[in-house]
Length: 207
Length: 207
Image (tube, rainbow over all chains, first blue to last red; front, side, top):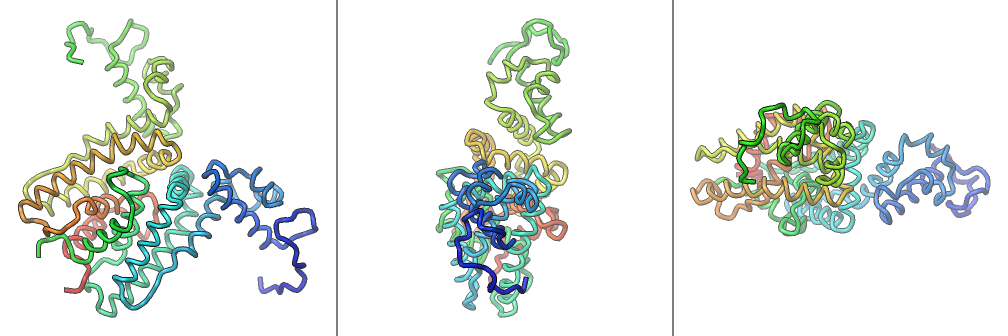
């Protein structure tokens, strides 16, 4: 894909019927249209029909690239998510985790329903679970554990701390409240994020 | 329902067409048939048609009690689950949590796929999420926090530990790995349960 942009006219991506578009542009248009539908109507709003109409892409093309509307919704969502959840590294682990978890609960407040629907829909479709694992879970875990590993080397973590389990006890705890909710008593908010960090850093055993 | 059993003949519950059965019996037959279907074929195997046939119950009756096959699957599943996950109280909190989490990961190993499907299906149906919260999440949280509260009084927890967040950092962490999996690297097994407890009790901050 080292192709230059020289032969691509500066016309709007989403206008159909102006000759062949580059595969990357079509793909991008499809993903953008899908994100919009997702946030307007939830996962049930994403059909190949509607995405095709909105993106000016043929349904055949969509079928070629995505095995189901769920798979398409999935990729659209998680490629959008990736940017929002960058992992900061200021050198102070606890401060960085606080920033990161506050961003996560903020995201859940805005679009937690859609995230829950996407993760939920994946549970009955082996292909979607595979996509969830590969396109999202492994990448996020690797990023987090890499950051935690640096902190360990810098002496900011106990040498025997289980770094992988930390991921489940911070991010995972937020997903738990999102998907197995007991609202309004148990919200997913910044106070909750702070409680997770305080419990895990200080430990719950008596001093 | 303080009715005696005197007028109930000792005939098999599941035989249809032998006159009126008590509501409780019919309900029980429907739930039992549903559990069987769930474990044989997953959540998609649960239809009112199949449950009616297997339980010897009319579809009209099923529609009267449950708003959807999902709602029925839900109740069948969580009433079965309740027995498996009793919360021990030996007076030693850490030992009891270990027992409880080992039971949970054992359950996930046997039927984690079905649990994930049920929780997943609930995400797109407001009625099911409500049922999940009321019939399962709140009850389990209450039981856990009650046990944790006793431990706190007994001096087995730091006075400033957030008991509600502990639930998310132990049970919730297991649900996270179940529903956002990265297998085989990150299994939900007893070693993972032990790592959760070690991280949370000892804390991850350097000593």
